[in-house]
Length: 354
Image (cartoon, rainbow, N blue to C red; front, side, top):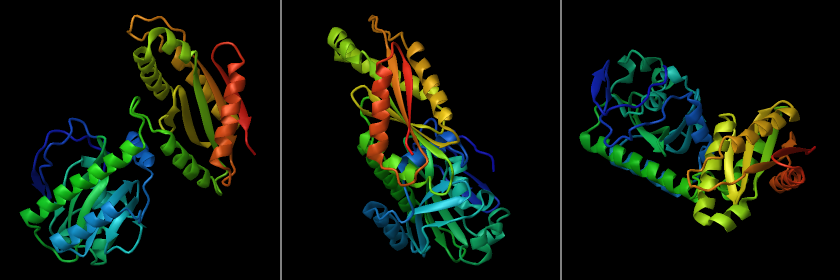
């Protein structure tokens, strides 16, 4: 199925499935199982199967009781894979159902609710392996949304064909909204309030996970430590309101100069970190750092009436070691950044961590 953007709220019925009006949908939802922006949003949440989150566990337990179903899930959807942050009745932390046969992938592709009363007679879902094995016969799912991104779905399944009641579907909808609110609270705790970027706590967790994922890949991970040169003088001469504006403008500019799969975080003050995975050579990280320097050149107009010169010092630590420590990576990148500061204007320095 091709990705489709969420649009105006609507209801329709097609071949035994029903799209239910999802009230108060945002003007724009980021949908599509393979959408890179969506996948970055999923990745940034750092959710895993069997998360052990008491709120998500309570949601699926409530769905099981209130809707009288054997299976209920909070499902994080990525291409060809369904990861259950919480579940009852599945017994696994994830499953691998092709997207074209997956109920929850359809919810992610459309950004709308989906109900299938009899999957065995449905022209699409009768091919689903769980339907063929008579594990699933009926489905209802709601989008799981965080910050306008459809992360996955909150869904219920039955082993027998059935028409879910309006009360059951209402409960599902409200609990999906609650699950989305839980995600929002988790994200807020990991977000810098000024720039909207992930914060230091998120950064440390993300790098830990990225390092562990190096095992057996032969790929490299780069951590780029970025400092805004002369930022203290901007605060001192123009005030903190201008300084805050500069930070927001530079954050947006840096984000536009890195590749879509890279992650940008603010550590605090005028210090930022960029994490780049799946690199082949250290020189790949240097090229990313050099592109980043253009962010300062492109962001000189702050619309504040203030004239300020901004340059960036970028220190890069690169490793392929799945046992490398986050502290060492950040320390090496920080040291390289201070060496870059010794050079005039914007500059990049590389440290390769063995």
